Length: 473
Ligand code: 6PG
Image (tube, rainbow, N blue to C red; front, side, top):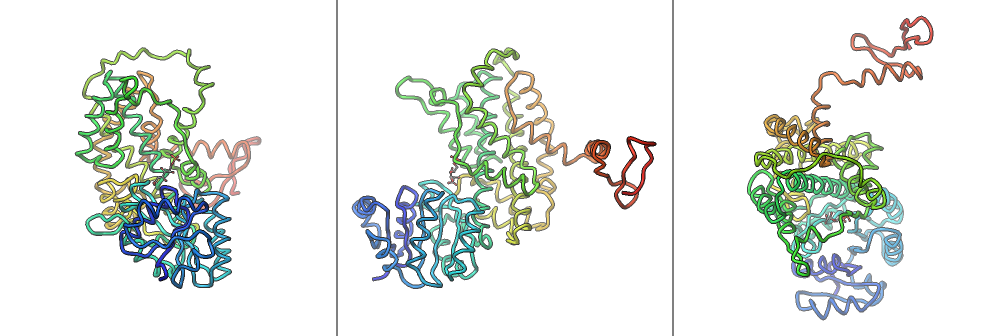
């Protein structure tokens, strides 16, 4: 019997996705470069549903119902092109190749265009939720043609996470839209984690609190507005004790944060699109700073304030509010980036729907995303999430606490680039007049770059090196 869908690449994510499909009653063709993995899957989980194993790619493709649907689950990179080509050579017009890895959206655009020439649908899809999500229900963000969504959508929605019965998967948009949205998801994930890390660091330094005490604080926060997967697991990581030394787990881990690249890509793309994603950028740079031990050692003797650890407990609730406010800023920036890309690439991404599919299954899943969805429901043309009345209320009432947090951090010498830059963004956006006017003046002075006036139309230049009169440019 022919399989409904296939998965090639059976490392943890691929294996769990194949099992998820099988558990939902689909006959799943499975293939892996080394057959041992396929055999292992059959041995350990073969009983969970109908699997059709193949040793060769050709038999794998031949074991699929037409139009064929094959999901590639390999580590993103050059290897993906090889697998795509191998599959495409065995396929026919109308067939569908799905790339479920964290590919760069530019690669997805290129691959989609090349396969479209050959009549094959290429679907670059974001899949979030790690190992557990892949098995129990991830958030799935597919790009590609409408036809491919018609053939794949019901299956993807079937295996995706559900929140209030609503599947965490929609058709994001054409070609690279799915991978773009997954990239921004990851950028926001970086930013979320950075803000959590700053909250932990500041409270630990300022209050002299232990990781176990801080775990309790995060657990408490998880019962309120901040209710989210990342806050929940922060409590778990902080309360973990190292079996070997008896120390808090967080104290035995090397303090250099790694990255596979999606956060960096988000910032690179934001620079091209001209969208200030300061929260994500600070998160990427904070990881980069942590990863330079030689510089850190060389700078270790530089002076700073003495941290007494006897700060006032009021700081705990201030940090909670600063965290929530900064989180709103980070998401506002990420959603702006999706809006800008949607316009630039003609993707027609529905922002509210992105909030919906991130409510479950993915790493940034949170109660908060319902509020974002409501904001876009109320006004699909919302220029910034900060202006949504609900979020504006939160920001207005948090701003004093937010300033106290940044002030405290500066005073005791704890770096909080996430909190500080989010506050600067907030203050920048709400200002009636920005010093950008002076920047324009300087540009005109040294480079005759011209400027516009507040009181009349057109571009102007002042003759800075002559009599300093103004003329239309
Ligand atoms: C997910 C995650 C996942 C992973 C990224 C980021 O949605 O399941 O975002 O994709 O966490 O690979 O990893 P780095 O922190 O290593 O860049």
